Length: 266
Image (cartoon, rainbow, N blue to C red; front, side, top):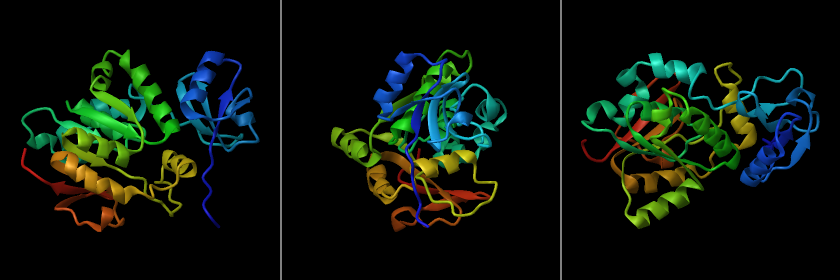
């Protein structure tokens, strides 16, 4: 059976103001439906709605899993900020923060929900993020806005800048402008075919919403041109090399790996 990627609708609940609904429609171009809550929706598999906790993407129906919300203050991300291991974290090692004597400038060209970018910003890096999906970008922007007023997270998200657009095209424009980043970080969507519980609900929703990054291979060449010191590619453990280009070395984990393309020492 073929994969089907569905666009959600914006859910206008009685508690959401019309101005916010209009703003979301302008950002995403989605249709609007009205209902009391996602569990009562029948005609859509996915809805984007302003929940009490923040902007949420959620499957519908009575037995659907909970919403996906970008939260840099509490939850798993907040816990990782406080107790996540600092420079011992795999992504921190891969990017080279421990090897650098100064804060790094990082381009995260596949930002998603911004969790990896937040880890890097927590370690002092300035992170420019690119996200191609208007829906995911709206979720991320909402999370950044809420975190900005938090006493602890506010100074971290101040180092995170979100751009809109298609990464390969934006990166080519940056090359034309002569821009450089210490590190370019890539984490393109890769199709997960297994049914294991380890495949998080966010990944299931993203694959339903977006599908895999079919042009992921187009990211590596401009990334190498923009990076001053290295390009880091996050991949599932058994995924092929991006653009069939073997990295200089890898950092292996239980279910994934970081492919590092070194260019110049820090």
